[in-house]
Length: 358
Ligand SMILES: Cc1cc2nc3c(=O)[nH]c(=O)nc-3n(C[C@H](O)[C@H](O)[C@H](O)COP(=O)(O)OP(=O)(O)OC[C@H]3O[C@@H](n4cnc5c(N)ncnc54)[C@H](O)[C@@H]3O)c2cc1C
Image (cartoon, rainbow, N blue to C red; front, top):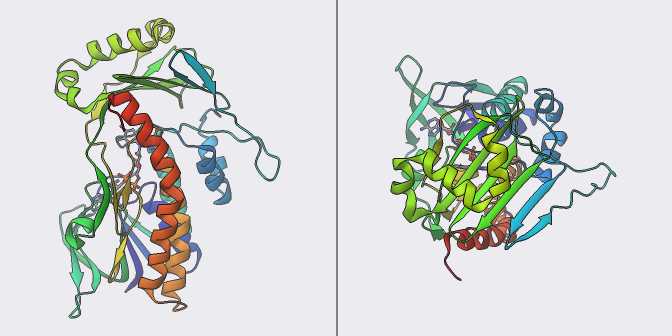
């Protein structure tokens, strides 16, 4: 019997596994993908996310992988350029952002959870939840990497399993603040493109986002109103380059001097929602519990914040200091209040790009 089983081992599931294991709990984390591996996401990690990596003792491991520090952020909008102020933290350290590739960031987190004592099983897909006679979730049913049936029991099962969360699908939590996608997005990687930091270009109808990442490469993403997804998908490269020329002409020339290194990847699955993040024997974290679309690059920093907050709440519940439902209700309030401002700013930016008012 585990204290906690965590379904999904990326930016929400791996740190939560690590933090619970560091507190002495018996933790199993199951991930359907092979680790390390990439996932559909660009890379902006806000200074607050960098600070959490530092607190967890993992910043050096991420930076050692030649991930450039971001100390300049240009936001182009309405013909104006705004520079994001990277100030100093309470210890006087200059703040900065990072844009790590997900196969690198996620694996640093995965390995750290294992080093903390969590049992990390990749290539294991959860296919159902076990419940006891009182209807309380008590474990998982899964298929391991050899397609063998596996069942495991735990005091709590946490879905860190993303927007198509199986845990949310089975437990059917109340969903609120739900909005369909406003935008669709595609991105790729270029070498030979000169950048001084992050650049964003927002206009009604399209956006371009530039993230310097590992290997001297630059990740460039574009977003359009969701209704354009089919048309964009038909010839991504042509639409992407045309958008680049229209929205950011000077950048377009720098991109023309470089070379694209990978195929385009994209999605129209960029919804907004919040789900009640707990019920009898289960909890939800990261995109499984609350989703904000990718316009302001909040998802990873949000997942890190939730991991710290949920580790405290679960510690209080698992050690018997407060009933599970009582402390998880507090977790939900803190999660939602803490994210309100960012959600509103992100929503406003996405609406602006989508060309919708209100
Ligand atoms: C196009 C795009 C661009 C983005 N850009 C940014 C950005 O610049 N900055 C930023 O902060 N955020 C960005 N995001 C958002 C960010 O990627 C997510 O918020 C973040 O990945 C959520 O982390 P998570 O751990 O909750 O879920 P995920 O990263 O989705 O991980 C969930 C994991 O659960 C596993 N899983 C699912 N079901 C099962 C199962 N049944 N059994 C076992 N394992 C399972 C999956 O394999 C997956 O590895 C972007 C998203 C998109 C789509």
